[in-house]
Length: 216
Ligand code: SF4
Image (cartoon, rainbow, N blue to C red):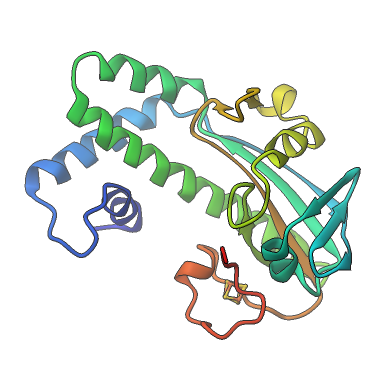
C-alpha cells in the first residue's frame, strides 16, 4: 500500500484495523476518478515576520493572536503564506456521486483529502528547496482553525494571496472554502537549522521539540 492509499485509509478511520478488499477497490477506483477531474493549483507569498510577544504574530497587514502559532514560529524571521486547491471539478464529482452511491462518496471524500495533503506536501518541498538556497529552514504548515489560530484568518490569507484570481479559491461568510478541497496555511521560515518532517509534527519523531505544533 503506498503513502497515498495509507492516508486515504487513515481518513476513513480504519486506524490499525485491516481494510477489506472491497474498500481497497473503492479507494483505487476513487483515485482513478479523481485523477481526471482534480485541477491542482497553488500560490504562495513570503512576508517578513514579527513576533512582539509569545502570543502575537505579525506579517503584512495582519496581526494574529495565537499562542500555538507563536510557539511554532519562534525563531523565524519570514513566513510563507500558502494556498492550494484541487479545484471545483472534485466538488462536482462528489455532488454527482452522492446522488447515486453514498459508499463511494465517503471513499472519494477521504481520497480527495489524501490527494490534497499529498499535493500540499509536494508544493512545500518546492518552497523548502527555494528557501534552503538562501539558508532558511521551514517549519510545518499551520492552518487557521488549528489550535488557537483563528479560523477567521482564512479570509485575510486568501486576500493577501489573491487566491480568488490566482487559483479560484474563495472563502464564504460562514468560512467555508470554495472549492471545498482547499487549504490555506502559514509556514514559518528561519535560519535556525530545524529539520521538520514534511508531513508535520504528528509524523515527526522529535517529541520534545520546543517548536512542536500543538493544540493546547
Ligand atoms: S516536532 Fe518536528 S516537525 Fe514539528 S516543529 Fe519540531 S522538528 Fe518541526
